[in-house]
Length: 396
Image (tube, rainbow, N blue to C red; front, side, top):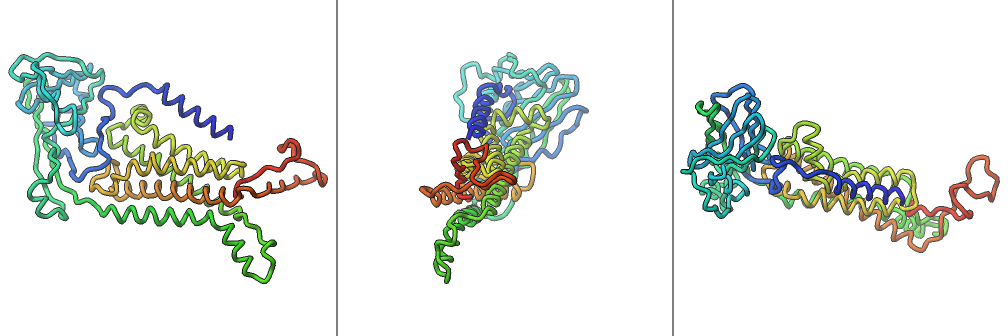
């Protein structure tokens, strides 16, 4: 139990001590999924050191400038919007795009200063030559689908081609071209059904002890000779399922940050702490609880149940948008993303249910006798058990 408390303390310390994300890091409104796929197809002409790509499932465009010169992004009225200089990112406070691009929906009240006809007034937004912004030319902004999609929503189809204009060195025009496609959503009910079914299969392991006693009561032998506790392999299986769910949770969180554009180790770790802290902490807690249970600790079932519920909620259900959207915010195929979320939900809920059933079965049962160590005389107590009281292993 002290290990669990120590792990919780470490998690709280991380939450307090980890610095906030930089200005151009992970967007707070990054979607859990979408049915529109945004792809950058070309940058023309493409100067060496300039990279533009879609991140956060297409919710933002990311421009990285390693050209050694200034790259300017033009706004919706061809006014100067952003300047990505070697020393950082600057935004023109007179550009309406500065305010319209603050949110994914583009709903903003423009201040009087938002006048594209005024000379640029630059304000520094970041110290890194990397800009990320919601560009409403590259994604679908309405809640209702396009007419062609509404007429045939089950078919993948092109919504539009889009272009974002740039300038390099203040004179050379550069075009960023891309596509916006409709991707039909999957059958979310099927994914939920499989997740629940496998969770129930795992949860049934918590009844193994009772089933053994029931079978024994129907046999010729006396039912008192059949123990009501679960065999040791059940705890091992639950530990493995908990570890599987925890690893899947961490992998999915890492995938989300990679999709958000955090490629390097430092950026990835910072993004995980800033945006995926609860999925990561609960995933690690599930792995920790797995190891804790494998050592047959007294609170093994409690640790598994607590970790299972937390990882299922914070890393599974919170990402269930993957079940109902055609585009999943991970760098792999959408199927892999949905499978990871399903594993987290099924393993977390299943282990929690099984552990709860095991705790209920052992409630009020006399403590199990502790096995004597080899070479110790009969009746001697274990040095790990003060006062000679045997340790109670919940459901073991």
